[in-house]
Length: 378
Image 1 (spheres, rainbow, N blue to C red):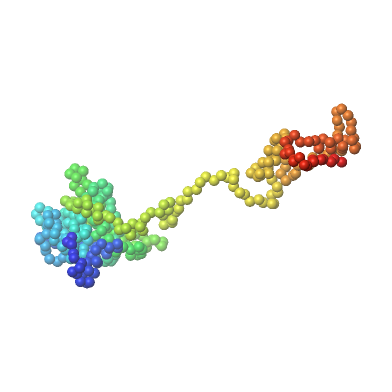
Image 2 (tube, one colour; image 1 turned 180 degrees about the horizontal axis):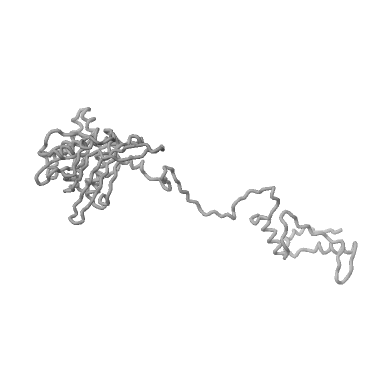
């Protein structure tokens, strides 16, 4: 693109150029329908039907133009700039390439990719030929459904990009919700490759959806062909350089922030939000349980009192002690039976007191010399 000096522009010119600059949310793409120097009746009828299918974002060019897209696409790029168009369909008819249709799209007012097909005149049928017998009503500017059949749309690079181009030409307005009654047509594209000569074909069919009574809330759906019917034979293709392709697939920063995936959060098949929580392994032995008084006093293996009682009992060689009971204090017996002698009464009590007050073997801190340590025993 040529550089523009914004200082010499008027405010109106600046606003006009600002509208043409890349936007975060672009307007629906307009498709140009351009005729070559010579066209056939089949090409005219096919372009007329395609114009009807892409309305209201179709711009038919009435005059003939001496254009050869694969040799010089300057005229098409000029038309794209003047009409703010994102795609084009070019029709021509020559002896070398009869009944030729070229589908293409633009990026930054330059040709992004082009695909040339030849219509089979034997199997071609226009929408007017189906109008006399059809019963289905197809509304203009309604959103079509698309069905792509055949492995060639994924395995053959040219047909894979042609699938993307067809979706761009028929995209129209982007809507978030769509009524079931507003869906009244479907476009079916079937790809086939002849293994003998590697000839590639795309069968283009357009059906109307008829909703009939079924006895339930869900209607019975039937498809009725409404035209056009085209068998497209692939001829040649042209693609922009890799730098232009990479630039065309860049996502704006604002949209990238909105589409940034959250960790451990995903959406289910029915639209429900599913989350995943990662937790450490829990030690159930340290789990704090509620104490229920109605169950009575029971032995709790985690309690500190039980551990102390069991440890003390094991050290003394005794059995288990019931929780909640106290060990009786040591009492002085009324009578002590000695193997050497028999003592009873006051004598036994006095001897037991003497044994209880034996001096300790532990080291005691020495008192100062001025103090007298006297122990009086009664």
